[in-house]
Image 1 (cartoon, rainbow over the protein chains, first blue to last red):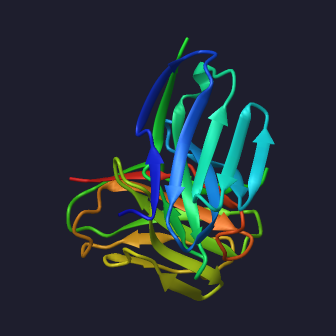
Image 2 (cartoon, rainbow over the protein chains, first blue to last red):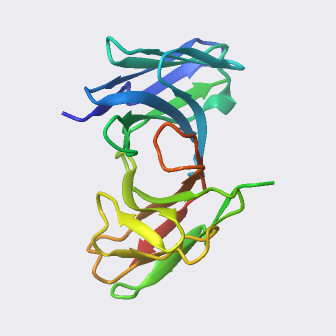
Length: 109
Length: 114
């Protein structure tokens, strides 16, 4: 079993829809990163969280430590949000990041 | 503006040749990392460096080599010993080594070996 699992693998939605991407992680991971990768390949860090909730513009990230689950939400989605969204877990034991496989999001106009 | 520069964006090499990928940062970050990304898979750590003249192997270091002679530079050499070198390579940096610190990524180099 992978230490960090994302779902769904692919997601297509219409502009304006509320988007949720999920990330489950295993024991030994204490913080989650959410990142965005655009078609050109470059990666941008969106959030890093170990508890609660963070918000930046239309993006919201939450984490439930007891359930070992994090979600990334996008409100009022727009075609420019189309990208691959990746979650990565921070191991307690060392500095290593464990990466999810990513969720490919397509927002249609 | 501060950031990470990776070059070139696309690279083609013949099988059996060594190739070096460049990564330069002007963020004054101590830690630098090289990742490999294959289609449908998560990023995998190749090498990382916490300070100048020191680096550590990641999960898939075989067939790769690095150097850290300057704080701002962390080049990756893909050697002929790497059995399947065609992939997307990403360089990253952080203020300190530690997954609780934010990472900055370069735009990547897509290497194709023919």
